[in-house]
Length: 375
Image (cartoon, rainbow, N blue to C red; front, side, top):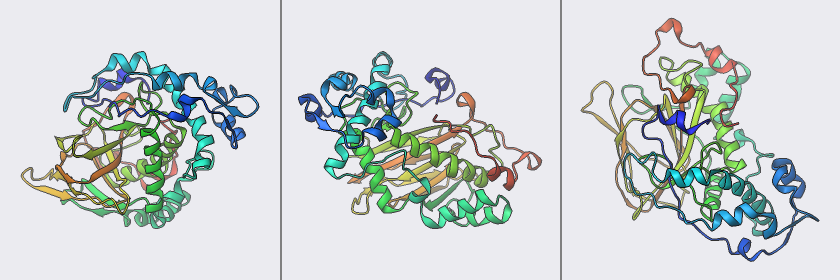
């Protein structure tokens, strides 16, 4: 996402969280493992994998990972305005942590097949296979045949959930693939690496952007967020909110996870997002029930009205960043979500609507593929 300083000028509640540190006994013991996926690893991150010899992984080949796991991670305390909390720690350790994430990816390339876990390989990744098939087919058709007719089929996959037309919902991800995403997030928690808080209000979660000091830099999640934005979120946001978004208004993005549970973050006070459009995806598994933690959105046409919404696994809410909203207190269980904000260059968020003649056509919304903002 570029330089943190330029974002902070425009995103008043953007910041980062420090996750709980877990130590990896395997890495600290320095046990050697045969590398079953060495060639794939070398293609993905050659500067790290070239350090191994005779297809062996050892503690000596992962110096940044070991060093980073020994850092004493600062605690995030601020409930509001936490943009720069512990910034000295993250900036001074930014390069070390980026290298550590590369080495952790190498470690997982080896250990995941042994542990029989779902490993998110960016080289074999296909975003369409993870999306609900009705939506995936409609979006593929819109890209292949851009125009009003194909776009209308995409629009039918979204339900308008507020009277002012500022909030929509859809079944975005199939349960099996929710589990795959959660396993990636669980791998972050088990990495032993400190991570920054996701924003200035949420303390628990992770940032998915290697350009930010203290963010998670796993190729798997980087690829997922890149493809999700480029193929789905950006054109869909332009379709649902044509009066708010043209080509320059959503070229950059900021992706992060959030986590609500007792003893951590319980709720989120009313606020606006630093985005022209936000997508909020529930990553709870089908068996993970929770009570409370519903969202409400303030009706832009009538400020006294509140529209309450609840999540189910794999559902996504997509809304204008300008609409005020909040999360009620969670009463039991846990809620896991992935959130992505889209905005203009250098974090600029346009608020003035476009007149009809300046809005994009359906052909323009689906006929131009934007360069990835995560690369």
